[in-house]
Length: 347
Image (cartoon, rainbow, N blue to C red; front, side):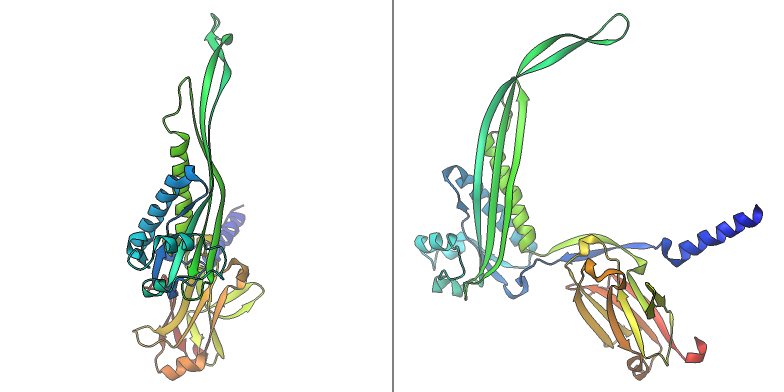
C-alpha cells in the first residue's frame, strides 16, 4: 500500500511539472479591428441616418456616443459634423450619409480634412406600448402551515418594447472604397410593470438600444486594450516537435541546426490579434530574429513558430539570450524565455 501511495505521488508530481499546472500572468493585449485602421489617422463621423422620423433622436445619440468613444480611444483624429461645415454643404453631408456603394463619389473638399468617413444608419426602430390582464393566484398559509391558493388577483401588466437594428460603413475618401461594413441585427429591450406604466418609455428604450449598437460599432472600428491571463507555457523555446510535444530547452547545443521559438495556447480573447516573437541577447541589443503574425486558434497544437538558425546565435558572440512575445503596438514583452547557448557536449 505504501509503495502504491509513493508511486501515485510521483505520478502526480510529474503531471504538475510537465504541464498540468502552469503559472499564469496578466498582460495587456490590443484587439485590432478587421480593417486597415492604421492607414487612416483622420476620420469623419457623418450624421447618422434614421430609418424614419421616430428614430431621429436615437440616431443622433448613437452618433454622439460613437464620436465620444472614438475620440477617447486616441487612435484617430475624429472630425464631427461641425468640423466639416466649412468645406461641405448640407447637400454634401446628406449625400454622404446616403452612400450605398463604392462607386458613389465623395466631395473633393473631403480630401482636405479626412482620409475616411464613418457612415452610420439606424435601419430599424420599432417601439410599442402593450397592456394585458394577468390573473395571479393569491396564496395563504392554513392552520397546518401549508401554502394554499385562496383566490386570484387580476392585474394589468404594462409593457414597453423597443426593437432596433443598425449598420455602419467605413469608406475611403480618396477612392470611395468600402473598408468595413458591419450590421447589428435587431436587438430587443423591454420594461414592464403591474398596474402602472414602466418608468422608461418605449422611445427611451429605443435610444438605449441605439447606444448599445453604437458601442458595437465602436468595437468594430477601433483597437481595444484588454487584460488577459497567459500561461507560462504559451511561449516555449524548443529543439524539435515530436508526437504532439515540443522538446523544450533552456540550454541549446551549439551544433543544433535551428532553434524553435513557439507561441501556442493563447486564450480566445487573443484571436485575430497581432503579435511578434523576437530573440535578442539577454543584456539587450539588436534582435537576432523576429516574426510578426496574427494569432488564430486554427494553428492548433503546433502554434506559431519562429525558426532561428543557431548559426545566427553563434555569430552573435554571446551565450545568453531571451525569446520574447509582444502584442503589436506594445514595446514591453508580455512573455519572455531566457536560454543559453552551450557547447554540444554540455547538453
